[in-house]
Length: 335
Image (cartoon, rainbow, N blue to C red):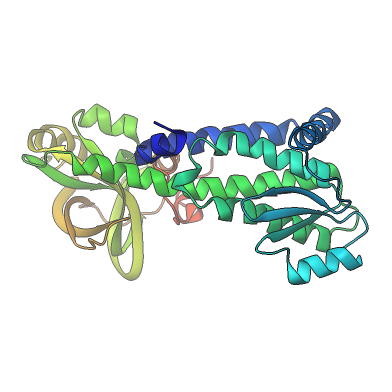
């Protein structure tokens, strides 16, 4: 089996793993940038160019995935550079830089981890991002240093890979869902401390995480529990939404795990149970029936100590996107 056929067999969780490795690798490189790194990157490009018997064109360096690195040491207004940026080189996207050897070496270095999974993402977008970033740096930065260029390009590539990783992380949840037996299981929407894997496993050890979900037309609130602070609940509010995690939980663990932890059977009860419609992100199902626990106490404001931090940890652990962290942190009582 050749490399590309092997990669085609990857599941979303496999791609997510390689993306995570790539992000860590680029982050490590970014944090270690120095003159020795620049020298090695330039030498690697020169060695590659020599081995491949590439032409010694004054203006052209690395070409990869329809991106052509262009020597812009003489500025963007240089006749050749200007014509190339305006008209392009065939079908290639011009990538102007005053450091063509260094950028060529950097792109080669970034490709080392990328080649493990590139068939599952848009490789042209990956390299086009480099070209666009380099062009903007040349256009806007007069005294551009090697560090400035490398750091900015690595930052932008890490951002792109992080978005891809989040997408594949969500997809991996749905892959697992396809193979889960749902008989005797109840869909549960966690928006508080149970977003955290460790907390959920304490209460429901056989629960299966499905992925990020949204409860629409509700807002996140903290209930009133006196001076020690309250806990999470949701309240109807048109146009608002609550982000959380969808779990599949066995019937008996709902009764003896979650019900007990949420104080459903206390007198008076701390929480009540309600079946509500949620949207599991990454699917077209906006009406999945899920169990939601809602506080029976009136609305408060400040949360108990370290409670909000645990919720945020759980949301980030599950790569939950597009939630307003400040709307949670406002409930932390400063000492």
